[in-house]
Length: 181
Ligand code: APR
View 1: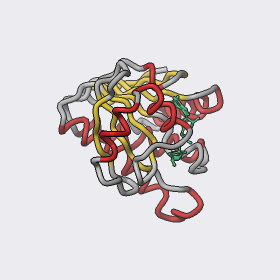
View 2: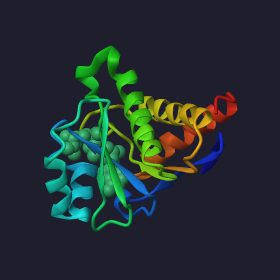
View 3: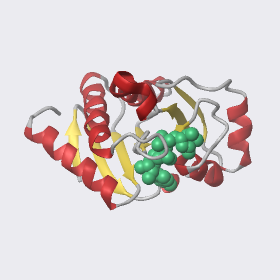
View 4: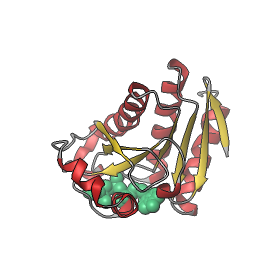
């Protein structure tokens, strides 16, 4: 499924983010930036050991912030590492912290003059964010950014599995119906 927002297109796809050919892919990392499981583990495996070497130079990353590295062996030239909120400990702050991950990742992409970026569903795995709560926040934040910034042409959400895809598809349809895009 896809929808326009500003000058850009938002695409929903099922698949593996490490195989995407967008200029950047976003990693759902942890604050150490030293790797982990889930999408973090998949990206480090696909990029190779040089990714960890570069991550070691970054001094970690705060929740809601984002830092850029090269993509090494992957098609994507860059990885933008962001750290999502842990749903149960972030409490009331969870929605704003999640939104900040998407906004900061897009700001970093704009700062590097990138035209295409792929996101995983941040925080909805190990960090326990319910998919149906996270999807509308992710899509609205991205759409709002694209409606107020030029440059980025393609934002892809790469959903790992049918349940995640359907949650984002439903959220995108709702936003289109509310004309909130
Ligand atoms: N491509 C796309 N999406 C993926 C992939 C992949 N190869 N592998 C997993 N996912 C999906 C999961 O299904 C989930 O929907 O990414 C989403 C985020 O899940 P996690 O990777 O568990 O990330 P998160 O919930 O943000 O937790 C971050 O987990 O891996 C550790 O180091 C990471 O400590 C950090 C924590």
